[in-house]
Length: 479
Image (cartoon, rainbow, N blue to C red):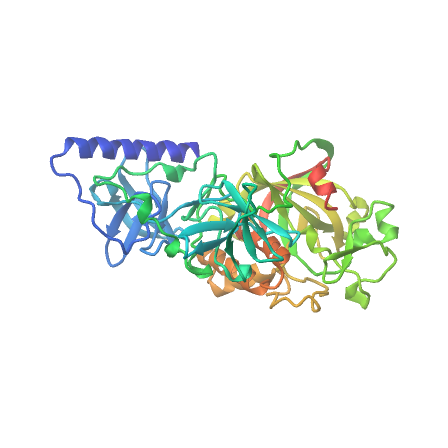
C-alpha cells in the first residue's frame, strides 16, 4: 500500500508541475453525466474509462471495471480488466483531461442504509441493528446525530430535544452503502484514493453533491480492487466499540489452511452437554431469536426445536478495521475444541484461484471461536458461520422464512460466482444484492450475510495462516 501511495503522489506531483509550466494544459471536459468520486483522468476510446490515482478504473456510471498499473516515476501505464487481462497498453495519463468530483462520497464505518429526506434535503446513514430496537444514525461525515427507532420508524435527534427528524417506514427497502466502494471512505486513516490528480478547473461545490447518484440498492457500486481500512463491516447500537482487542497467542495449534462458509441453522455441536462440558455455546428457538437453556432439547435438523442463534453472525468492532470476529466449525476429529479460539491471517490468495477479491483481504485477521464440528471439514479448514454461506450437509433453515440460500455448498457467493462468470467485481455486486434480497425480512441475518461482501470482500475459500489464541471478550460475550 505504501508503494502504491508513493507512486500516486509522484504521478500527481508530476502532473501538477507539467500543467503549471504549460501554456495550454489539458482541458477539463464538462461532463455531468460522469459519476466522479474524486478527480480522475478520462480516457475515451470505444468506451469511457475513469482512471483514479489509487489504481481503480470505473465506467461512466461509477462501476469498477478494471485497474490501472502505473510504474514509478512515469505517467504511462497499462489498463486491465477485473480479471487482469490487458485492455490497453501505453496509456499516458499525463495527456488525458481530468474530471472533477461531482458525486457525494460518504464517510462510513460499516455497511449502512442510506435515507435521503426529500423534504429537508438531508442524507441520513442508518446502521443495521443486531437487537432490532434502535440503530445509530450519522450524517454524511460519520458523526452520530440521531437514532432510528424501529418501533415508531422514526429518526430521532440525539441532541436531547427528542426531535423527530424524519420517518422511514420500510428501512429494509432503502439502498445501502458498502465500505470500500467508490462512494465511501473510512473516517481514518485516509485511503490512497484521497491522492487525486490536480484539476485545471474548480472542483464541484458541495452544493452540487447529491445523494441522487445512489437511488437504489443496485446503484451502490462496489470495488473489486484491494482496499485499505475502508473494508469494514456494519455498525450498530449493539456493536462492540473501543478498537481492536489485544489478541494473545497460546502456543497451541498452528498451521495453514483455508476458510469456507456455512449456515445450516442446526443446534451447534457445542450446545450439547456431552460436548460442551459446561461451556455451552448458546442455542435458540423462535427463528434463532430467543435463547434457550434446554441443553437436552433436539435440533431442528433432527425434528427438534433448537437451532443456531442469529446473534452469532460474524461482526467487527468499531475502531478496529482490519480484524473481524466470527464463529466456526472445525474438523470432527477436533471435537474437543469447543470454545477454543484461533486467529486466521489471510494471505491474499484463494485455494482454487486467486482474484482481486482475495487480494483485497490480504493481511486481514479473522478471530474465530469454535461452536461446531463438521464431518466434511478438513484439517486447516475453518468453516465460518455466515448466513447465506450454504447449508452444507444439513438444512435446518426451512422454517426461517428466508429466500433461496444458493448452492448447498458455498451458498449465495458460489451462485454469484457462476452467474457473474467469476468476474470479481460482478460477483461482489451480485452478493450484495442477494444478501439484501434473500434476508429482507431478517435484518440480523442480512447483516451477517453482508459481512461476507464487506469485510471478506466476497473472497471465496481464501487461504490463511492460523494459530490458537486466547479468546477475546467480544467473542465470549456472544458465545
